[in-house]
Image (tube, rainbow, N blue to C red; front, side, top):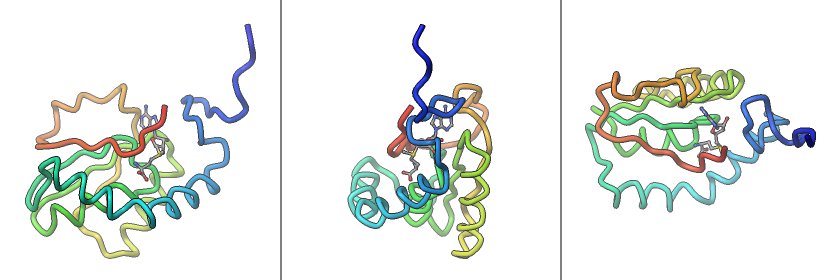
Length: 128
Ligand SMILES: C[S@@+](CC[C@H](N)C(=O)[O-])C[C@H]1O[C@@H](n2cnc3c(N)ncnc32)[C@H](O)[C@@H]1O
């Protein structure tokens, strides 16, 4: 049997070996893709007041786009398997004064999404 790629984390996330680098990469990518992401989410029907779960929320970039779309009355719950990414996302949300975003440290495979009263879920750039 072949040995696992050094790029894979224990959860199998392809870009997760160097988390600090990955968070910086995602933030830089978000600068370019946020306007398109926002437009796609809007076309998909996301709007003010919705409660949304963002699967594989990373350092928070996609959740922050959703938070902007659903604010001020809607909310976002980001679900992310990397504890480090969850910490970074929480710090960034706090620094940005975003009060309608929360982050949960969990594997989406272990999550029963039906237990949450959400109207939509997003899965931006979720790479296994
Ligand atoms: C390419 S990043 C995208 C992050 C964010 N959605 C964005 O657009 O900036 C994908 C994220 O999904 C997370 N992920 C991958 N598999 C996961 C799983 N099974 N459960 C929870 N998170 C997962 C990774 O740890 C990584 O942070």
